Image (cartoon, rainbow, N blue to C red; front, side, top):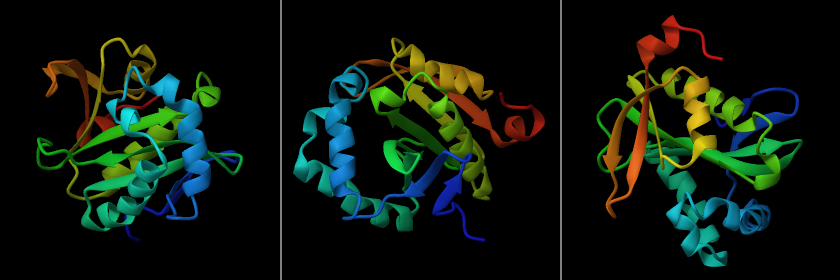
Length: 184
């Protein structure tokens, strides 16, 4: 079987699937538009949001997936897109490592969906034989994002500065840790 898989069933209501460009454009654009104010404090890319940005984001998903640089999934609840999560290589990502990113529509928060989706992404990441560790990075003030890696057995290992001087908390889960301790 090829990993990561194109679709992952989390439970009877929640799943992850590759984005389909251009079929997902109208729904993703709407969900992003409704989420901008919720995401703005945490994600700088929202300042670029618009129809062209959304179309470009979707058009890059297949290329990045095939290149192995980003495996981005739509988070789907009861058949509707409610967010995204994925495995990403950044310019400074160490070998054998992917960063996990995730966001949800504000109406989908507070129900454990991010934790369940990221748990599925962790499993997909460690199905890739070369992956030895996964990272989560977020702004210190984003307590909701911090709760996800904490629940899943990640350990906070560092604080780093971004390109614009902002501080990020860095969480890590190694392959060995993932197989030796149960995640919540």
